[in-house]
Amino acid sequence: NAGVTQTPKFRILKIGQSMTLQCTQDMNHNYMYWYRQDPGMGLKLIYYSVGAGITDKGEVPNGYNVSRSTTEDFPLRLELAAPSQTSVYFCASNPGQTGGYTFGSGTRLTVV
Amino acid sequence: DAKTTQPPSMDCAEGRAANLPCNHSTISGNEYVYWYRQIHSQGPQYIIHGLKNNETNEMASLIITEDRKSSTLILPHATLRDTAVYYCIVTFGFQKLVFGTGTRLLVSP
Image (cartoon, rainbow over all chains, first blue to last red; front, top):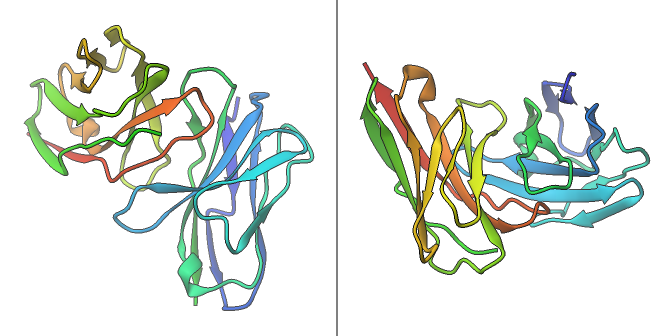
């Protein structure tokens, strides 16, 4: 059981470039989430999904897009990267019960 | 989601109990109290959650006051590996976790 796997672990982007952060889980969880964490701050929700084909915006969705074509995968797309998107990105999943979330180990993104 | 208030930092001696408080005075009847921790730059780790009864698991105990306006996370015998940022989160169900800035716990020898 790998849990929640995020790739890549580190990435440097130039302003205006695009990239996709990958997230996959092998626990058959319906609920998946993307958070970002800026230095010294708590996590902020970007997007979330309650099941395949269903996504919704969180607190800070601007500049990002998501898709959920399968239960396992929930990629986060950055279009036209900006320095303000420099952050650590965490993906998480939840089985849909009042239990704990499982988080991935994060992707550290720097936009220069 | 209800807001929570936590002290920004706390210290604890290794081997002693660490008691981390959280105020959530606007909590509603169907909202749960969750605790997570984040060690260094790793992903947050689930610790425990509860509705109104006290809860205990292999990691910690959660004490919720009778009026549910505050709670305390107890690490019974803190170790150096418990040094982390601890987040208290109040939410309904499982759809969203709203993270504050948490309590930075430093466990010292």
